[in-house]
Image (cartoon, rainbow, N blue to C red; front, side):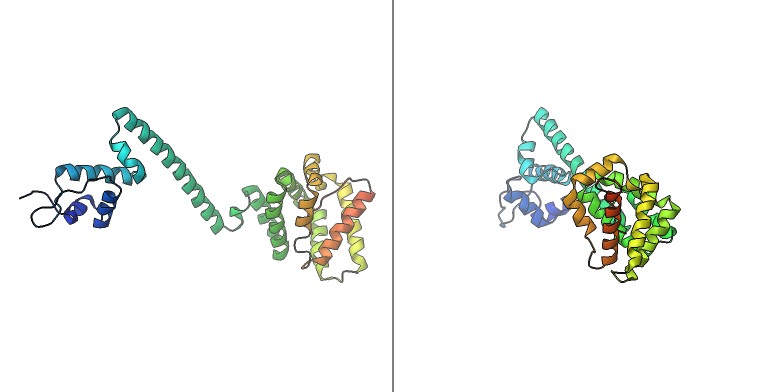
Length: 261
């Protein structure tokens, strides 16, 4: 009578299902033992040892297709193969950690789509009294700018930071947002555009640094996409921005690119 244990017992010893053991057989990783007189396959010590080895490598992350050659390799090949598996696992761990960080940032709202510096700018806006809808519009513009004009994004952030440090500009920006309730032909829009242009001219840093301006000038198509975002919902802002830019050009400022107000 053949000694050994049944497949169910072997699976229980390994802490796996019978289906898993059969899966190992199907992949040729462990030879199926012969059946005893009662028709049952009996797993002896050799088969159990092989099952333990296969299970250990599989749990460590080694693909099943690589386990057979790995177990049949010499010591040097075995060590090299394990080092390669370890490298791939490290890459996978880094990828999963990055995904986890993205999920954490998603839970925090803007932080999945924008860097901390941009989020800090958005966080300042409500404190300075900006309307939530205004902040939402700026958030969308920042997301688009980061993707469409990456070379000019840091400069754009610097421009916004400078603007939020200027009380006069803040007052004009709030006025511009309030203007959305005006009629598109209201003469006050032109007056406000003139006031904004004058403020830019009085404080050129509000327009951004030369490198950023150059990046935005090269990205005219992308700028139009960003500038026209929400145009239907904010027609006055679109007109106000266009009028302000026109006044700056007439004053000798080459190709200004202004965030929609």
